[in-house]
Length: 457
Image 1: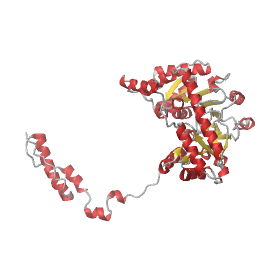
Image 2: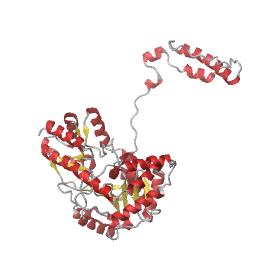
Image 3: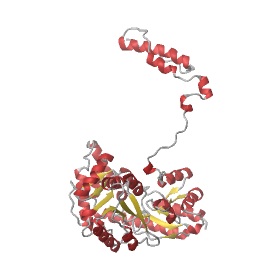
Image 4: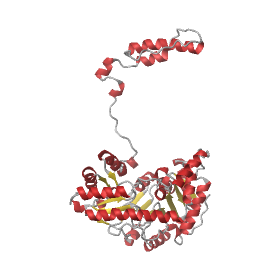
């Protein structure tokens, strides 16, 4: 059967009358193709649609429906009104715009290990591509339990006490939303990772802050003791600590544990930087006497294996706390990427030599950045863990951390993060900015060179 349908010439001026004429031919030819018989049946839906095509006069005068719409105000729930676009997004966008070297956001500019990526590829090839079990692929749950025992000495049930999440950020969200009730008090140590406050706001919690101050960012025990009340539900810890690089000492953790037991308070422990502890051993609060039963330990793959885009995290907690975490997780993401979970299990079974080499590499990167920042004129505060360094920017005369970071990007070509966004009271952080050293050595040296050349005191 010969197809009689022909398209209009591409040179034809396609005004409304052309479209309407074309529609008649289209309908007739379509009916012929469909039935094998000529037909002059109308095509009302197409004709009706074409009647809405703007004329040239409409376009010229700007009277189309789309241009008549007015700008609508942005809408957001009241519990999130105070939160703006994250500072990481803002600074990364500025970095791209000005061609700046990004020492702001904490993602490596180098890739993770080949053996882990190969495991992910193999999992995809092997057909492990459908929904995973909600609380984790069994092999990954087992690998997490094995790693946790090696690190802390604690034996946990991978089936009842480990929940795999979409990154540690989701583990944090599931923990807050699953275990915190509206009006519960939760204590944060400021400065803190910005998702903490936002997630607690979504849970309806009352946030109480204790500020860690330079140079050593030590916990003021008397302040902590006076901050705990009968309404305190939990303390959120992060050690090694983002953004300061502080590691909570055994003495600080012992006091926190004692106060939690005495006042029946939970601990939510964010330990994503546990393998980047440089100057002392990492201590998991769950490993302290009497603390496992009241602790949710949260961690992830991304920082340790330079695979931040995979978003594989987990929460470890006793069954009575895992229940709440899992309930929230079920309605947040339900399940996490299946092939990446299989690869994560391979990663967590890496030999100890991997972690030794990781720490050695980061210590070398840290030395390049710290020495460079000091030579430029910053006051650099000690960083015992993570891949961040906090400095005092005031020797350069800018009014606050945001102004300094904007100047640094636009005039010097280097990105840092203003820390005031990590405090309940932004004034507490106005003198401090954060740099990251999770970049290759060439990038770190280039950033230092730019600051030496262009940054003036």
